[in-house]
Length: 477
Image (cartoon, rainbow, N blue to C red; front, side):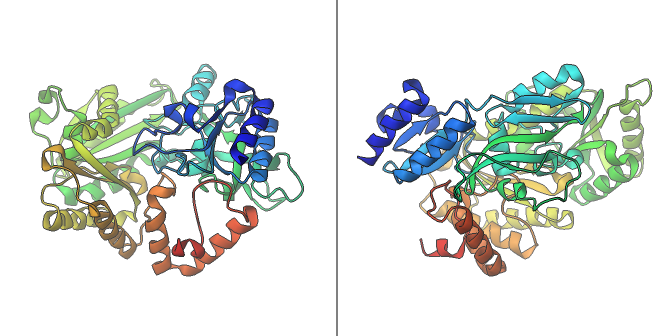
């Protein structure tokens, strides 16, 4: 009955077209781009921050759990509802009332419902962009909730590094039901506690982000890209060190791609243009970028000369140049190509660079011993320590046995802990990682769990926001 009363009041607030009960929810709000479909008691799409605040108050009165949802890419299921009796999907699609650009300060005040592609399309004619580069197209709220990184994080940093302020609706109102502004959108501001940082990466568990002030960057005027075949895997990190010493902040991306990942990205294409048809065991994608025009700084020439030095000293065996768009297209096709071959178990990891290749070898050895049918198809942001440790279970091997996914994750996460890494590099922590998150920090730093749970309880004592549980008490669920 509480749900029916909520629906009636929510429709009066937002309009009939923007509220639905369980049976009327469009599948796209329940089915993410990856993983299985969820279920919910209700769905609502507020038109502005005031409606969003009123919806949160309604949900509290009727005992509903609010699951904020942006573009619903579904990487960790943090925006996919779980409970058909009490989950309310709160879509931020219509939160688009603010788009305020300050060209002098290079900042943008923007509502949470705007998508990354829309923002950069508007900024491009002005020579600016929000420098988060992804194969997906998330909303502002979603990027902030999971602290997205992307392929050019090496140069520009993650979303956190490019956010100057937020407007939020905290789960606990403390008598103030309206929006709370955190940060003034300044480059320098030590006038208050930086509470906005708590909401970035919290997976919607502390409240709803309705607006952000983003730091913008000049749009590069030129880029130069190469796909490299190192002499062997022992040459990978020396090549990285050489690139950073040679080009410094001009390096905007430094990616690693295993042979299996390369093959997935090139599926159905003519391989003869890539390393003469013989794919290397491991490849590197490097990009230089600059705001200077080519007349002042020729990146393509710089890249070619540097790579010739690497060839001469024996670190490099081959390179593909002057195929910038084709190289990035290959990189962005990898995930789709892998899914076409079978089941992909993706682990989003981060490590100190010195341990990057060691984790790959340990993981490969574990697979050979326990899952000989599986193939490691890893790729990722080697330059900033990020690794998409993707395990492909081929379709011809049949379905995965119960518990296999969990066994793999436990084994790899144990290696990550031993090497001082992170079990979530850039995709956040939602239900997909809940059990691993608790076990990881219970073993490494139980005090962190205790303080995290205490903080969540301050913001949301009734646990009515989001699906993430940060504290020790979640261990007994």
